[in-house]
Length: 493
Image (cartoon, rainbow, N blue to C red; front, side, top):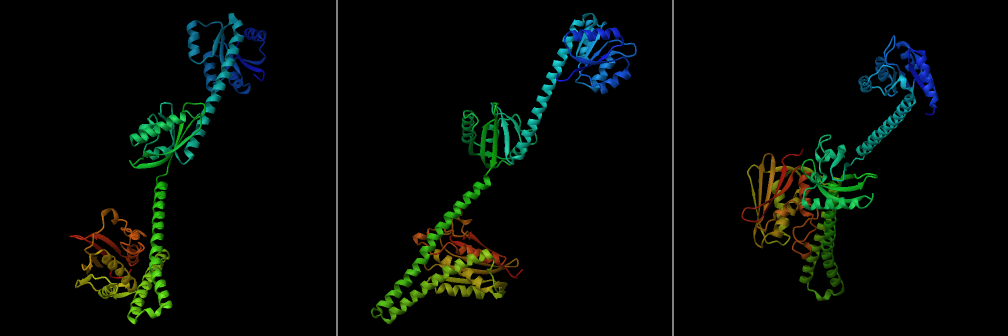
């Protein structure tokens, strides 16, 4: 020990105390001691003298060794307590050791006293070091758990048999377990939703065991707390100096879905740009070609030819205007500047205006309009309502067989004007019905000229209806064809 050993002697016989001192000094032990006889002095010495070892007779005139030992164990539990007595049989010695004594030495064999003291002190050092190590281990574990809990990711520790020995709260939440319920489970059976994924996990597990501390990262799928399929970024690494592995799981399901959606949008945008360039180039080519001919060779054309060319040029210009208007409408949707003049309007009149416009576009379909007796007026932006109707009527005409009828029905239902536009076209397959109102989405391949347009018509139509507090929906028509229904509140909000 780094300081002089302090020994407290509870001994009422001065001669025996001297013999104890002599035996210890003879053995080379450097110490100072205090001898006490009464209980009061003993209790004071425990505090004031702060002994490293207590030597006590078993029987004293005013006190006894067992009571002294009980007091010492209560107040200084780590201080060795050694009986030095002349009256102690084997059974008594065993009892004292069971009750907390460190050792006992018979007074007629004081040659053992130094050995007993040194051994007791060694045990104290060993116990102290063990406590320090245990406390260090507990502190390390507390820090270890704190780190695991503060990562924000689901983490667990597995042993060499892939059994979970520890899991943080995020891990328990991800898989729907309460505190401590996940420990002892096989991680492979817990996480993997299919034999293929199980095989991948086991391959990565075997790989990380061979990499001597280097982590292995991979994406996989696991089953979450609500039996949902999650995409996770998994990291496995061997914990230094152990056979255990730390496993980290980061839920990237939303990120993957967003990434997929971005890819789809990019693909649709690229498709739109190709279609838009084609749609813009076609009327521009017509305008440029005819104006060049009219400028350089006007004498080759009769007045009727010139009139026909002017009509073609006008149609091409209208087509350019229509495309530009669609793009401008999409821009207005982003800034919420769509409706400008909402007032009460005659819905049948607006429908007829849209039908007249369709008649001028060269379609040969007959448009039949029927109106319920209680359907008449609604508060709308008349210009935008006509645009909405033209989009749906034009869409019906493009997809309808030549000379087939397009039916328009106007009705009043539950405080709404319902305008149904029904054609006899091929209809829309179920896999496309949820997508036809998306921006840039086209059921057919516009580059094959099956239908002109930018894939914005139905998107714009629904936006106009939404701006009025209504909607546009699709349903298949009985007997074949499509039904697009516009619902608009009778009154403005």
